[in-house]
Image 1 (cartoon, rainbow, N blue to C red):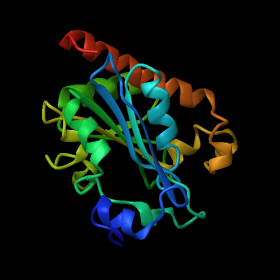
Image 2: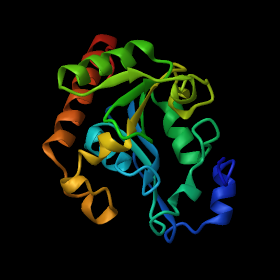
Image 3: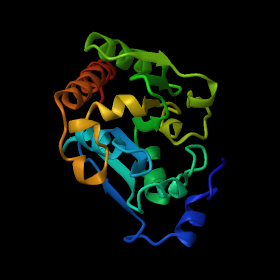
Length: 211
């Protein structure tokens, strides 16, 4: 099934901000790296928490956080190539590096790696593998290679898209419960995953002379 809305403007006209969803962001004064979770909250559960943790208080962070009733947050999904919310676009265009966090379906714990920043994509993949996580290069429908994908709307025209399966994200929360109330209860796997991504990013940013 396709998206209910084809742009953020359509979404904002059909849903109520503060009731159905919220937009949250932090603009960094010292880093040109941005962590995005445009399908956050209950849309693709766990992605807001991952992006927020990876950004910490150092890097940029943005999420569209859905909190409609369980089972209805998919209405808030605007695909990455059409996601044109102005704050997110402005932050993306000001960034040199983006990691865009997403959830994919799947009963096997794996991360599908995509985006046009192939070197950074592969560095993240290696660090995740070294930490014991399964990774694969994403298939065409998930590879995030379209220049219009918000992960690639950086000043460099490239970024990274991480698609984590349902099973992988379930491992990050106590009892495998990804409900909003339980997503504050993270597991050691959550910390290990974010640490691996941050390690890859620190190496890449140091080598590029950016932060």
